[in-house]
Image (cartoon, rainbow, N blue to C red; front, side, top):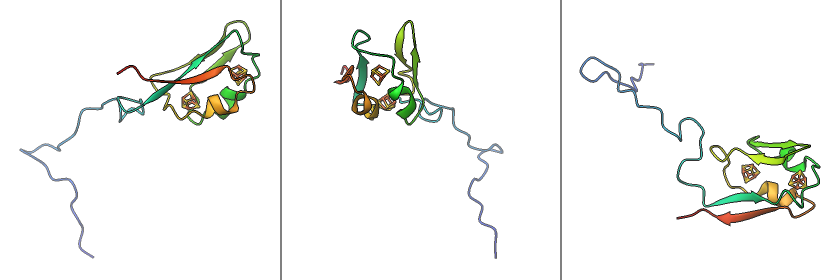
Length: 94
Ligand code: SF4
Ligand code: SF4
């Protein structure tokens, strides 16, 4: 079978792209909602930390929940599993 050349050099160099937010797995501009935590309602049960599919939630016994918004996809799983309804999904500011 013939080899298929997918990437061809341009002016002698491979056409590499510059890493962007999307390439790094960061949410970039496409998240439409973000989770906001009411740490006053939170009982530190760790359900949100366990179920977040991208592992961006940390629950600390003293300070409560923190979310890394650079990587949060806005899926809403954390809000769905919270037994205290301590997490609300709110629209991203336009
Ligand atoms: S919205 Fe989804 S990705 Fe973001 S913190 Fe909650 S579970 Fe994780
Ligand atoms: S699931 Fe809700 S109550 Fe449990 S740690 Fe997360 S925010 Fe707090």
